[in-house]
Image (cartoon, rainbow, N blue to C red; front, side, top):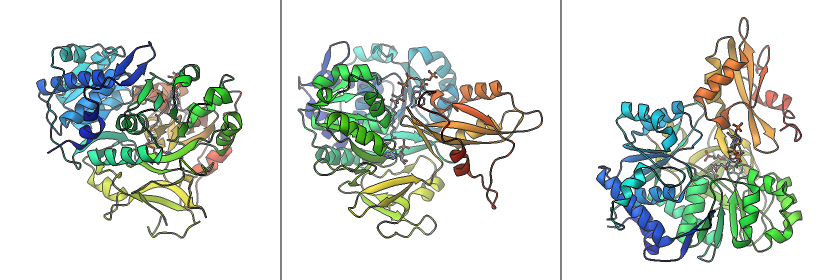
Length: 506
Ligand code: MCA
Ligand code: AMP
């Protein structure tokens, strides 16, 4: 028996003094040093009684140690569940409880709040700080620098990533070792990654993009990452001279373009810029080309499927498209009512099937059946079409989703909080174009009686929801526009407020 994901991503680097993580303090962590750290953390997982199939939830700042916890989980067959640092205790409570996490790793500053949750769920709790200290690391230093690798099959679960939904209830997407491995193998080849590559890594590592696309591809390639805690255009430009590639959400690219230091020379030796997680405006693609002479490569993915399509490495990268289905991924555009495949050129719902597609939602068989067909096709909820050259174009969303700076926001989650406040009859949250974040949530509220207290709504959102989900504006309206069926016409609202965030006021 083996452990396919560990054997492909981590084991080949054991004993190698090749650079893996270049840190902003000027130090470099080699592959071997990283793996020794991971093995020590793996020893802690053993000592704490975690076994294959148990869940480990982690809400910490980005650090080499946080990535080493992921490696340790893979090595021990523990299911890794990373969480956005922005989540509030109310949100965390749900994830920890719903996943049945056996161990929670949190930032020392949040330990008191989270211990109230773990005391109730029975999970163990350890800490890990941004600087790589905390009770987890104290325990790890007492562990040996090698550890037993637990046998796993490709079908065993490697990670849970929670994604929100139209009902407002988050779902744990269950990802197997094969889901992650097959996708990183395909991407490494498709994008021509080698051990010579150095990736500018400024994405968070609690989502698919920064963890399973960026980090897994680099681990598989044997290259290095310039590992930044968060995005800053200044830092990207400072470190670009020693990088070869970068991955980012569209906001990274618009912010780089807003920086006068981002010139053709600054980008000259970079072989590849990749964008995803949200639509890259054709305008951004074109401005980037005019500035640097290079074409951003746009690809399309989801938490449930990893990456589905990509523009080509060689050949035309078409602005406003997400390229072709990746090798091994089948993609069709279907009629949303009947599910039958539509002819090329027609707009419908994008469905995908392949080794990248997840196993289902944790303990939600009904939800899983709604979105994952028996024949293996996953209904993405994105609306698209295939152009005459075979490029996939995403033209909209069938699902009620807002993407702000690459973070997903489901309006229902916010509407539930607002509707619960006194003086509110009902509300509708819409995504409005925003020059920095792409889209931002705006709440349209219908008053009841004396009407709502706006400060109370803001406070309720602050308690229940991560900051990036907070409505950037609240609008009071006498009634919501509805169609003859009584359904709220969010398109009409989006149209009414589409110019709300002009470049100057954002
Ligand atoms: C931070 N803030 C945000 C966002 N991020 N507000 C709206 N949308 C956001 N995305 C808020 C903070 O709470 C803060 O609020 C203020 O903005 C500034 O915060 P700061 O920490 O300075 O952040 P930033 O520099 O403004 O961050 C923006 C960012 C970051 C760099 C775009 O959000 C980011 O790295 N996004 C990447 C997300 C990502 O990795 N997505 C991939 C998901 P205040 O000051 O008012 O308190 S995976 C996926 O989608 C699929 C699978 C795929 O295809 O990849
Ligand atoms: P997530 O739930 O975080 O995995 O987000 C997945 C969603 O992000 C997809 O269903 C799309 O709506 C969107 N998305 C990801 N990449 C792109 C892209 N290149 N263009 C447009 N939308 C994208």
